[in-house]
Length: 79
Image (cartoon, rainbow, N blue to C red; front, side, top):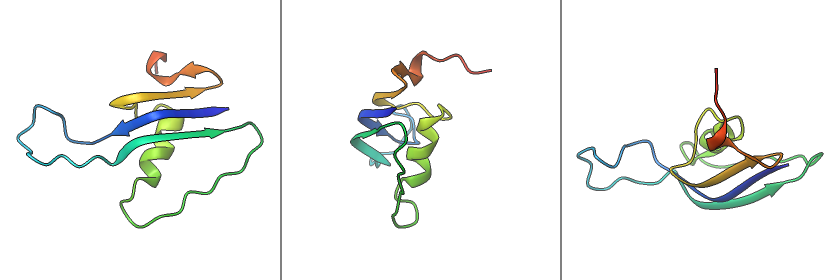
């Protein structure tokens, strides 16, 4: 199971000079159960790939949590 709990993500860091940092993902909550088939549809640059990259911990949320089989991706040590 993959669970997104109020996930928010943006690419610019908070300490950069950008006044209007736009969130790519904002408070996304979603549960995908084992065996379910999910399709992500949307416009270019709407966050589809960003959302998918959170599933395998290539990205970690700035806010919120992503759990894969109950394990928070923030707690994983990647090689």
